[in-house]
Length: 250
Image (cartoon, rainbow, N blue to C red):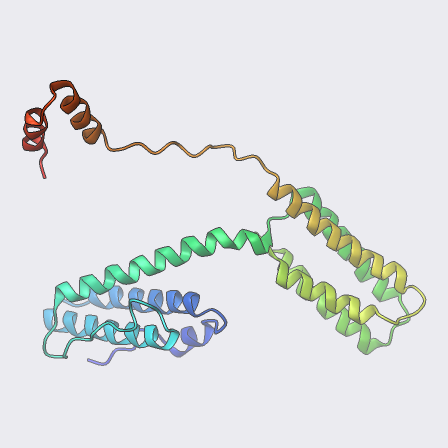
C-alpha cells in the first residue's frame, strides 16, 4: 500500500524557517490522513500498512528537520509490524509536539503584542491619515504604489490576534525608508509612522504591566502520601503505612 499521507499543496504550505514548527505541522497532517484512512478500512493488514507508512513519513521528516529523540527511531521491517513500537513512537511524537507548542506559546508573547482596543483604533486612524496623505502627495505614481502596498501589508498584520514585532517593524521601517528624502510634507508623513510605532510600544508596555489575576496555586503532595506520613508519625512505626499500602489499589 502506497498512500500519500500528505499532499504537495500541504507540504508546500509548511514554513521552512522553523524546523520544530514545520515538523509539528507535517506530523499533524500525516496523522489526520492516517486516522481518516484507518477509519475507512476494516482490513487489519491495510491498517498495519497505513501505520507503517505513517512511521516512515514522520521519521523521514524527523531526520530532515533534525528532531531529537525521533530522528533515530528504528523503523520496523515491512513484514514485522510491532504495535507496541508504534504506540511508543506515537507517545514520543505527542510529547515533542506538546512541549514545542507550550514553549512556543510561552515565548510568543516576548516577540508580539495584543493591541489594546484604544491603541488599535488609534493605529488604524493613523494608518488612514497616512494613506490619505500619500494619495494627496506629489510623489511619483510608482513610489506611491510601493508605499500603498507596504501600508496594505501592515494592515493585514494588524488583523491578527497578536501583532508580531518583526512584521510591524519591517513594514514601518520600509515605509520610513520610502518616505526618506521626499522633501516637502515628508516630516508630517514620518511623524505619522512614528506615532504608529509609539502606539504599538504603549500596548506592549500595558500588556507587560498587567497584574496576574489568578495566582499559581501552591503545589501539594498527593493526599495518600500525606496520609501515610501522618499515620506513620503518629504510630512511631511502619505497620500502619503497610496497612495503607495494602489498601492502595495499585
